[in-house]
Length: 177
Image (cartoon, rainbow, N blue to C red):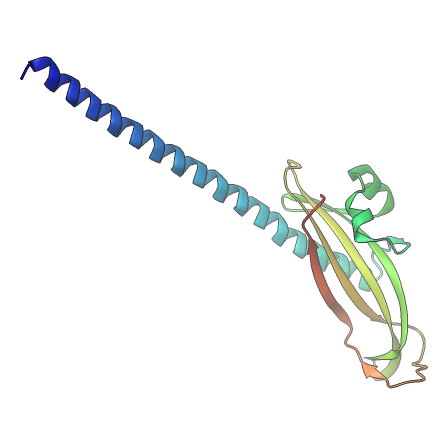
């Protein structure tokens, strides 16, 4: 067997192993990048949830009052950052900037809230929050329904039901942002 054939075979095996190593390295790099992106998106979502809790607290205690007319979530999702700044309240939390608006959903005369040993009708509000990472790559839109005690006594013509003050529902909008 000629010596050139052995050298050629050895170089061919080295080339194949090098290509397999390069493929494995690129797959690991791509996987690492995907994991980092998912982690950063999750961090924005977690910080946005914390910001939503802060917004609910500020609204509950009268610190902020960014009331708008009832608007569909799809319309709110299409608003630009400038429109969010003009219509709502703004804040900054760790690595996110957030904007939120509050919509009054009205008083439920059959929803009874206990506050300071008195009965009041339940007053429903919806808070919508847009959170953006500082680099504006990651965005999330969260919405919650909040119940407060109104200043009215229950005036129900049907069956009354007890409602607890605070967050009643939570949802995340993931498309169209």
